[in-house]
Image (cartoon, rainbow, N blue to C red):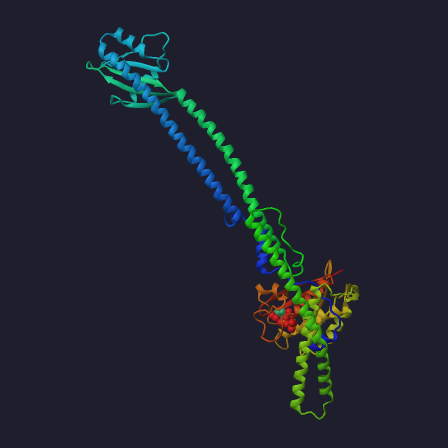
Length: 498
Ligand SMILES: Nc1ncnc2c1ncn2[C@@H]1O[C@H](COP(=O)(O)OP(=O)(O)OP(=O)(O)O)[C@@H](O)[C@H]1O
Ligand SMILES: [Mg+2]
């Protein structure tokens, strides 16, 4: 098979390695992150979440403590006011006593106001209220005040809510005759002021929260955006774009901008060394190709004409010839790849009758294969006459390479099938074997340079063949794919555009 390959001349490889699996994974993560990854796994999510939590807890904590202190002060103030009123009437009542009802009513009226109510509870449970047409003392407030202090504990203050109104009440004194002096103060007005203050605070707090969140989002975005750009640019990077790809640096935090500049400088150095490496490979392949061809020619001729050679000498010369062929092929592959990298690979495009090419390939392959090769052309004449735009020499090279792999990676005697099919939008050619197959997780990588599957026998190849095949097929505007089952066989499909 090696010999046939060498007979095919001309080479025009296309581009370089695709994205590495790590890059593909990163790119996929960047494109479609789940909400969980975005929130908890990303720098942006973590920064935003931490700031939101800090702002939320800070505002809530500060306003709750403020409100609690305000509320407490309000109650304390009211209680002090109540106490002052209680002390004043207590003194008067102590002097005058509680037996004279008219005096009591007058005193009660004297110390009452629109907000402060006073009354006396007699031992027989009857009540003495201030006598006035202007003051309205709520009966419900009186009953509730007394009900809130069933044990009649002197000096205990109770906060009572009646509908919208809030009252602070206290049993001020118990007189020697058993009468009790009560006071109650309406504190709803202060409470309403407190509620208004609370509503205003919530409003201001919400506004501040929204503004803070927006500011934080924008700041975090500013930090993260260049990093995302860096990730996207790295994910898209290939050997072909190395020379031109640079991270656009417009704005961002100093540290991130520095990282971007360092990254760009790194790309520059990589591009330079990649270009030098390509030139080196190209020059070496080119320089070695000619002497290798000459050596191979001499060896071949010597073996053919060497009637006076011993069997051992012939064997040695044949091995040398095979090795020189292998070396020459390696040089060809490297040269193709290096030309593809530098864009100097030219691929012809002409109408090609596919069935003819397949027949030629089958004939060439059969002359060296030790196993059957079945050529399967389409049933109808119309389909057999299918014409594709391709480079005939390169197409044969591709198919022979695939057949060579099928032969190399299959146990002896298992047949190889070369199948031509017509698909709705393309011409398809399958090379099918019943060989060792390829592990599923390595399927994509077999097209990478120097990649050999983990189950490939040692020293049976360099891992360049399929990368050249891919390069050539894509150069002809087509594509190549593989499906394989470990231990059962593989199918490589070349698709050429109609
Ligand atoms: N038909 C096949 N069956 C099983 N494994 C295959 C087949 N074709 C390719 N492979 C796997 O893919 C790898 C890459 O193939 P490729 O042709 O690029 O390299 P190679 O055959 O090892 O060396 P060479 O450069 O000489 O062709 C192989 O090493 C092998 O592991
Ligand atoms: Mg190969």
